[in-house]
Each structure stands twice: as structure tokens, then as C-alpha cells.
Amino acid sequence: MSLPEQTLHSSPHLPPTNSVRRMMILVILALIPGLLAQVHFFGWGVVVNLVLAVATALGAEALMLRLRRRPVLPFLGDGSALLTGLLLGLALPTLSPWWLIVTGAAFALIVAKHLYGGLGYNPFNPAMVGYAMLLVAFPREMTAWQPIGGDSLGFLDQWRYTLTGSLPAGLDYDTLTAATPLDTLRTALGMDLTLNEIFAKYEHLVSPFGGRGWEWVNLWYAVGGVALVALRVISWRIPAAVILTLFLVATLFALPDPDLRPSPWFHLFTGATMLGAFFIATDPVTAATTPRGQLIYGAGIALLIYVIRTWGGYPDAVAFSVLLMNLATPTIDYYTTPRVFGEERR
Amino acid sequence: MSNSSYRHIINDGLWHNNPALVQILGLCPLLAVTNTVINALGLGLATTVTLVASNGTVSLIRRWVRPEIRIPVFVLIIASIVTAIELVMNAFFHELYLILGIFIPLIVTNCSIMARAESFASKNPLLPSLTDGLFMGLGFTGVLLVLGALRESLGFGTLLAHADLMFGELGKAMTVTLWENYRGYLLAVLPPGAFLGLGLIIALKNVIDRRQARKAETVTAPGGETATA
Image (tube, rainbow over all chains, first blue to last red; front, side, top):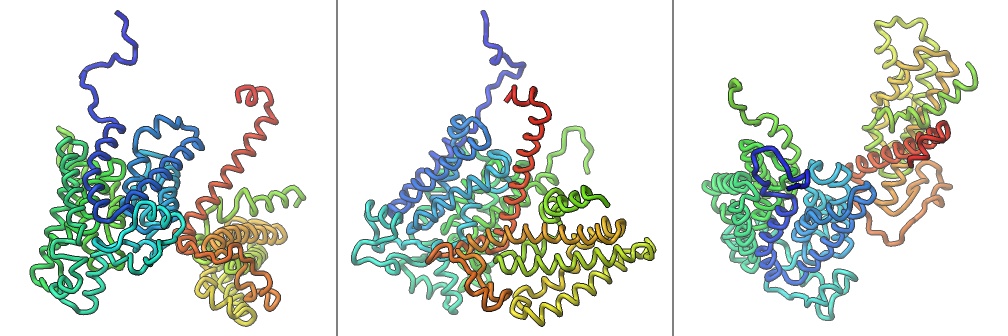
């Protein structure tokens, strides 16, 4: 009997259960419930964003692999560029012009991923670098979200808007867009309204349990995320640390000041909290890897989310929080490396 | 000094030992004021004049300065020169002076000036020191200009905007608008644009250097390299 040489390994004879490809495919499958919820509430714009972002991400990945003289098809097929495109597409507002999406996805893949050495070498989450770049460079376009229950565009009208910027007769930009729940809350709090007044006045945008529509989107992302944890594709530590810390911090501030500080439920079920906790913060390349380190990393993200949302000036805080903690990852890993059996306690 | 060593000094300043691309010195002004070509040109020229004057002075007094106190002496010389340049710019290019602001007095702390005084002018006679100062300054100015052009064209869609600050009435005609109704790419003007731009320029220089090294290799050894390639 002759076996091909590559299949002979020394013991233990345990096949690896996770490959990059399998992980990425499972993560993408787990995104689907939340993705469908987002399409349901925010319309075809989500789909158009995703198509453009994914196409650009794959194109940029192929281009960079060619330029770097790496095999194109095996790396393109591992799904990592696809996932980056999906995450960026989901984060962009529904009335984005095409060049916004294309610039963001190309920047994510070319600058944030391949200029640092490609998959496994990038210190920052590529999708979030693309998002942060767009937020800094095009602040006005990055707020073009539609409210749920407002006028929405049909599939073809949405494509025409994204590609040419022209809207069907009778609709204009200002009536289609509305501030996001987090922005609404910040502006209204700035006008000295209390939370109950805000929830009454902007009933169509915010509720005590999160942004309208966003609470369901977040719930479905959480369902997909829990499935990933159950399948052991991602570790439970990072999402658990993000969610618990955000809950604790929000409770701590909401208890003495319930008129001005939204409840912890609001923070958990609005914006990109669940998408961030389960899908963005858990990126295996840029997240902390030691068990204790992952708890610290997740807690740091949650603290920063609360700080930036409450006292900062940007629409949502997940991207910046994740990027800042990416920066801290090597230090965290250095100081939390588990003690090797037999090594003396420090 | 022979002609070939002058050529060596010139090549070093402009390319092989460029203060911005190879020594990576003086990054603070380099990154801060390169948002337009004119700002870059203003600061680049001021730095060049400082480099020539400080290199010349340091070279002249190099035999009389005790090594123990040379650094404070160099700093004093550079500071006096920069103060003089600041007054001149205030008098003749007042608007530009206001825009460049703190970065003119900060030329004192530009490490490339101290580096040239210490590593070249204090060891060489007057003429080579002046040449070194001039071409190090021009090399620095060149990088400032390229970075300024990159950031201004991407950020504002123009080139040489506000040229009248430096060239008077003549300058008003020099502004080139590259794209009409350009909405602007804010990132290029903000600090990240400076870092990204400088990184790309350094990468470009390395690519050119590697190409030339490879070419030189194939010329010297025609058998080995080309046969495998």
C-alpha cells in the first residue's frame, strides 16, 4: 500500500477542524439572519451596498495578490476578502453614493490589509479601517441613513440612486434620510430634553429598548453570533466581555441619572453593538489571543464604545473602539500570556 | 576636493541620503505643512536657507569649538539663523508667515539641520559644507513639494493655490484647477493623508532603487541574473 507522502503525520492523528475557509464561510452564514433583518428594515440600499462592497473587495484582493505575486484563486477563495466586503457593506448608510462604497472597500483591502502583508499580518481590522477612513473623509455622506417606516426606494430606483445620485420624482434627499437613533439621542440631549421626552418626541426613531428597527437587527446578529460561539468558530470571551462590560457601565451611569443616560438595553440594542461584539471584535487576526487577554480586549472595546457614544462626536463608536483596542492587542497579549506548566509565578 | 566627491555630496542630498526619505528626519514640519504646494515650498526654502547658513557657519568655526560644548554652540547658531529668517519672512511674506505659523521657529528643532552640522559641517571645509547644506535642503524641499502636490491635488483638486502669497500678483495666474467642482477628499489634507502619502513616496523610492540595483547587477554579471530570469 502506498500513501502519498503528505498525508503521513506523526501523532496525534487529529485532523484540524478549522480552516480559514470553513471559519469564514460559517461566519458569513451566521451573518445572514441579521443581514436579512437589516434589509427588511432599511430596504434595498443594504443589498446594493453589499454587492458593490463585496465586488470591490474581491477585485482589490485579486489585484493586490497579483501585484504581490501570490496565487490569486486559493487566497481569493478563503472568503476573508468576501467577509471584509460584507462587514463594510453592512456598516455603510443606505443612501451611500457608489464611489463612497468603492473607495472604502478598496482602502480596506489595499491599504489596511495588503500593504501590511495580507491576511494574518494586518494589525487593524480592514473593514473598520475602511469605515473609519470614510467617516473621517466624508462625514456628511456617512450619515445618509433612512428611517424605518419612511419612504423607501424600489430595487431599481435604489441602484439608480447609488450609481447616479438621482432620485425618482417626488422624493428628495432630505425627506428620505433621518438622523440615526444615536445621533437623535445626542442632539436631543444637547437640547436639554429628558429621555422620556425624547422617546415621546422621536417615537419613530428611538425607543427605550434601542433604535427603531435596530433592536431587531441587533437581536438577529446576536442569534447568529451565539450560533458561532456554539460551533466554536469564535471564542465566547470577547463577545461576552463586550456585552457584559457595556451592560455594567451603562447601568452604572443610568442608575443615578435615569433621565439623561439611556438604559443598558438601549446601548446593547442600537447601532452596531451586536455586529461589533460577535463579528467585528472577534476577527482572529486583530483580536487578542490569550484567554485573559480576550476578556480585557472585549472590556476595553465596550468601555470605549460607551465613552465615545456618550461624550464623543461620531455617529457610532464601534469602529473606533475596535481600532483602538487593535492597537493595544500586542501589549495585552504580551502581559497575559498564560503561565506554562511548571513555570514560576511572577 | 575633487569633482567626484562634490557629485557624491549632491547625490547624497538629493537621493541616496535624502533627509526626508532615507534619514526620516524633520518629519514634524514635513507632515504638518505639506497640505498645499505653496506651504511646502515656503517651509522647504526656509529650511534650505537655514541649512546652508548653519552648515557654512559651523564649518568656519569648527576648529575653535571644543567638542564638549559643540551641541549648545550649534543650537545657538541655528537658533540665531532661524530667528533672522523668521523676521525676514514676517517682513516680506507676511501672509505665508501667518499660515506657516509655529513651524518657522520650529525649524530650529528640525533634526536634519543639527544632523548635518554635527555629521558633516563640523568635519569638512567651507565649500563642501555649503554644498551639502544646499543639496540636503533641496532634497528635503523636493519631498515636501511632491507630498504637497499629492495632498493638494487629492484634497482640494488644485495645484499652487494661493501662489500669490509667495509670488505676489504674478502668482494669482499660477493656480491650476485640476478638477472643476471637485468635492475634496478631506483625508488627504488631514494628518493621516500626510503619513500615508509619505509612506507611499518612501515605498516608491525603494522600488526605484531596487530596479536600479537589479539593472546594475545584470550589467555587471550578464550570465547569471538574466539566464535565470
